[in-house]
Length: 442
Image (cartoon, rainbow, N blue to C red; front, side, top):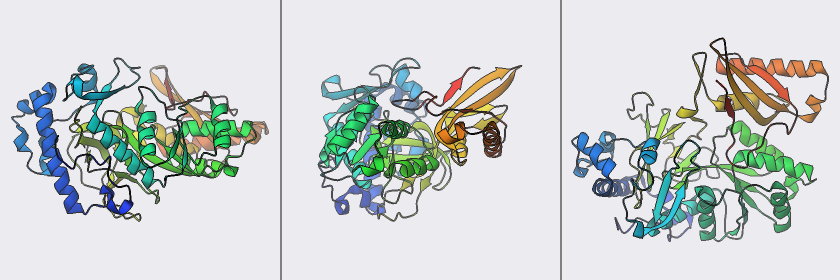
């Protein structure tokens, strides 16, 4: 056991007593205590971390202040693949009560582990996540995150049960059944990826069900980047409030950060996850308020501590007080990843920029596909976007004008021209999990 205050899984869930409201000096003292403990644990039990520390001439005692973390080596995703399956564990398998893993579509899957205490922490931060989004005892929550090796479904499940909500563990897919149960069970909250909920909005319309007429009042959406424009579309078309949550399997799963009722940035549960923002090029730490790559250190992970993990997610920390009263810092929603960046004719382009531009144009639907090709050694980008039924069935001139308007909007947003193809509603493939926006044929 690292410290007696490590797990808040059994802590009272009343906001006034939650760690979200700790005074800044108390929070920093707790962070430093936990940071020193986790660095020592990783040094003693993880060969890769110890070797990298020794390369820098560092011992665990070199971390005396929070600022000293900047001298500690980074961890990257390939470290998890290179040490597959259990090479980064700091606990023996006899102490591991849960294993999760990524899909492994790009090679060996990434394996993550949890001790019993880790599970308690995970439950606690997920309970805080749902409390921040206004979910409470008595809510009926349709959990459409995937169960199984993916961390989303079970991570949300345990947090929901901890706050006394009724959980429908439906997982993803089978959209007609999703709508039927949403209606018959009186679901008040849904958890899913934002792209899948957009599909459910369409499915409900096909079944003659108006979501705004149902008890559903909130959606807890994560697992993929999405924009403010996407939120506005979701809320306008369903009548719910859409909340963004953030997490990643390498750190714990969902439960790293969450929006609150103010819907203005995501509160990082920084008593368990210490955030830094670094320049993606120089890797030097940046002050609060500046945009860069999010780096996270787990302060209380027993089974698999992650020290200075480079998430590749682009965001910034917001030190300003939040209207909800929480004292833990917020981060701006992640709309881009440094490794999602496309370089088209020398210009850096993120899918989120395209989504934001498309949704500013009336007549478009929030379903699109980016197709990259190369002709005569020159990169080409085509954006296929669905349009509303009335636009698609209108005169050819109307379609041409809309296409030109979208092309102009994209050119203004991206700095390069892209070919735009308008396609009929429901013609692009829907995803039951994370949306796959880019098809690279180069």
